[in-house]
Image 1 (cartoon, rainbow, N blue to C red):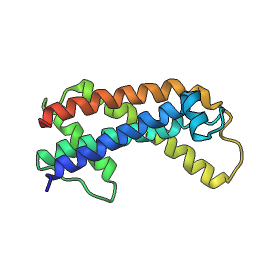
Image 2: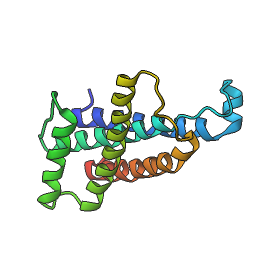
Image 3: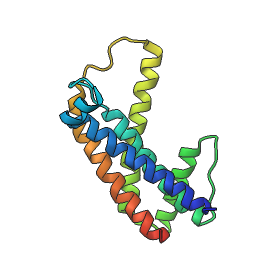
Image 4: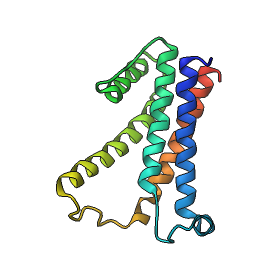
Length: 157
C-alpha cells in the first residue's frame, strides 16, 4: 500500500488535473461543443477551488512526511499554520508559502461569496461577468503547478 504522504500527493495531483480540465472546458469552444456545453458557460471558480485543493493536499503530504498531522476541526487553518512554521524555520521557502497564501485567499473569497449567497438565496452577487475570472483561474493553475511540482521534488516522488 502507498504511504500516507503519497496518497495525499496523489489526491493533490487529481485536484490539479481537475483544475486544468475545468480551465480547458471553460476556454475551448471545441471541447464545449463535443460535451454539449453552452458557449457562455464557464467553470473558473471551480478551477480556483481545485487549484487551491491541489496546494492544500500537497502541503498535507509534505507535513505528514515530516510527521506533522493536521485534522478537523479547522484542518485547513491548522495545515496553514503548521506549513508557515516550517517557513519560519527556513525548511520551506517563503516563495512557496506565498503561493499557498495566494490560493488560500482566493478560496476564502469563494467561500465568502458562498456564505453571502446562502444568506441571500439568489439576490445579485454575481454581477461580474464570468470571463473576468479567467486571469485569476489561469494564475491559480500556474501557482498550483509550481507549488505541487516543488513539493513533489521535496518528497522525492
